Amino acid sequence: MSKYIVGTSGFSYIDWKGFFYPEDIRKSDFLWYYSKHFRTTEINSTYYLIPSLKTVESMIMKTPKDFIFSVKANQIFTHQREYTREDMSKMKDVIFAFDGKLGVVLFQFPHSFHRNPKNEDYIKKLREDFFEFDVAFEFRSYEWFSDAVYNLLRDIDASLVCVDEPRIKGLPPSVFISTIKKFAYIRFHGRNAEKWYEHNKPEERYDYLYSQDELKEWADRIKKSDTSKFFVYFNNHPRAQAVKNAKMFLELIS
Image (cartoon, rainbow, N blue to C red; front, top):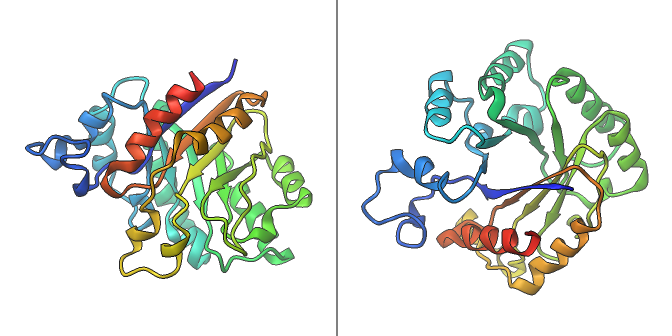
């Protein structure tokens, strides 16, 4: 029987007060409160800044023994793509620090990361450099969604990140592909097509609340899969809509 690990992409949003967090809660208690509702979260702050080991230790202490953290790799590995051995060592130290609570290491590439031989080789190199961990690659360009790429990921034991986002030309298709049997990784970004490119603030892109029917499409797909484990994260975070949809999704797959 498959195992479903469902949560939100990030948890430290101030605008969740009143929608999910109590109004009087301290920000330092967000994770403790969050872990009473979900058993996993995706750490996105690591994309911007590699945290101290003390910060990781604090996060571990605030969560139950069976809580799971998936960790997004720093942007130097996905956007700048000119990392040193020292960069890799710092990132690995943080990942290792999560120890038994580590889920998957997520590498999210920009839309400008197109499929070509050079970038395919880069994917292979990343996998080799982070061989100790379960990894998932998220591509923002539709070019990566092909049988040849799925086979490449199978060969290097990496999971393709399946995404749900606006049905806009050039973006990845809304498909479920499990490239390895061990686990699959799914991210819900919302379907706010109007604000995807035209927005005043970045968070407007993710301002969307999924309907039960929209989530049921995905629940029905993955229930048919023989993949052992599913990591599912909701990134439609404005006003805690991700929390509502994550709870809704848990009900649909239970």
